[in-house]
Image (tube, rainbow, N blue to C red; front, side, top):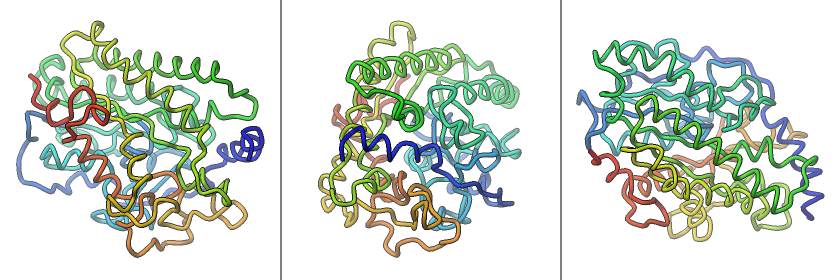
Length: 384
């Protein structure tokens, strides 16, 4: 299929990715108190995490928003303690698994949950929102979401003053002990860049990548001004290789490379920013996680990582005609594939817990600079 035809037929559907749904009264959305350890603090010198981004790192904020982008129903959470929580996968997401590596005592609670107050915020807060992006208008087609700008405002205006009150210290003394994890950017391409009205030339691609990277740098400098010192930046993964993208080319098993080439431009700018921005953020350390390469390597040779299926979703995402949307698990189909650890993708866009485990392990431990740059998160945690 040509690029032009693909844009005409594929991307108008992105505006309708999530069908309208009713909010669930789910008492298990937060899991604040579902602590997996008895320690009172984190390990490796890290007290906790503050998380910003989209659905790959959202752990339940959209449960409390009037958004069509939700994962608070089965089969999401089929392998998660207490069931569906708002995580867009079958079990733990990247943030949960990084918390395991850091020996944090509890899951990081979502900001929008009314229970995320008081002592519940001591080990960090998750501000991420499924469908959101770096740009303020990204995700508007799926309803109410917290943009990255909104997420940082929530941190500054609500969580930070309360954390200072809880800890009895100024933020400048507190926040160097926390990781600031930022995983965002993919939706900016899904909802903004790839539209039929845009002529996809390499020039526009570079301009958009520069615009996104500059906007991201602005947000990082804001977090730095508030006291953040240790940053983990997750690259955009190969969105042209997701089951959703591949479904538009059923006779061709390959990825849609126009999508991948576009996000690679942004990823390249982001990695270069890690070094360039340090002069403006003295005393900070930034780690770039090449999530694109990590997932790409899995997709190229899934068997080497223990996967049998790197092409289709584990749950029934259906089609618009059949009552689905090709992205999220259908609400009327609560089943998921039996051997979920053999699938790379749980739904049309998001990895399974098994794939998240590999991403988290490499994020934390990889010695390869083409996977984590310039150091890994284990080393970042020990930076004084």
